[in-house]
Length: 188
Image 1 (cartoon, rainbow, N blue to C red):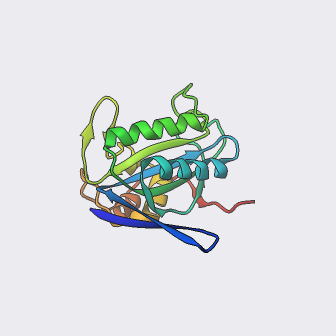
Image 2: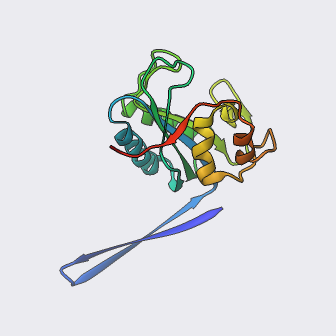
Image 3: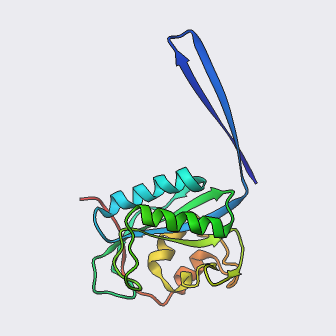
């Protein structure tokens, strides 16, 4: 459990200081993959981060940004991807709902599986929980098969142990059969 104190100080003409203390308790850690291949991809990733931070918890780590060819349906523009570590008090189901709401706010339209999208937000891990429901599967079932997920995930959680495979993310990356190029993105 992580306890954090945020102190906000407002001063009015040097006469009065107001101090407000906000206490938040974050119980869980989630790793979330962010991806975009429509519009201003970098702006979409940053907007998603801002919305996630405002709705779901505290972003405590952010990977580098990588550019990759589309996966699944390859006849579309390249994606930008990154992974964030989120400290949250929301349940996995509630977090999923907040992420789906965020996708809608950022213009995500679900027309086809693996189709182009303004934003894609996937929960990769939630603590060490294993969930298999109609709406949510954790850990994400494709983590070990996708370099575009594992490379940024290893930036911030290389030693994290997959609760089903009992291997670190670094080990999953070494043994990943996906040989797609994942290149560090540098803004033009």
